[in-house]
Image 1 (cartoon, one colour):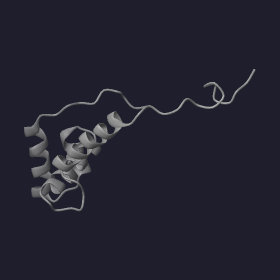
Image 2 (cartoon, rainbow, N blue to C red):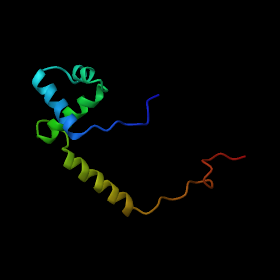
Image 3 (cartoon, rainbow, N blue to C red):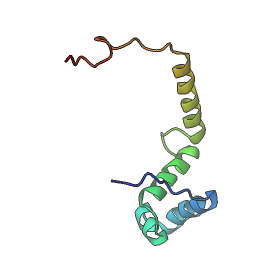
Length: 94
């Protein structure tokens, strides 16, 4: 089972890792191995950077934040749902 702790890297570190992937022609996994970090980290950073530059069909960071904010707004405006049938015991009766 994975750790609940997520290591935070500086913006400079992530920018340098992305530049290393771009300039070296190596994969994010190879760069991660060299830097001693999870292989998923540079892969995600690289994908997000390309989206922010408009080089992929994915949402940019700004669009992702707006979507998150709007979803929260919608949740907050919805009335609470009805109680489950059966008194809230999930249909289990003694």
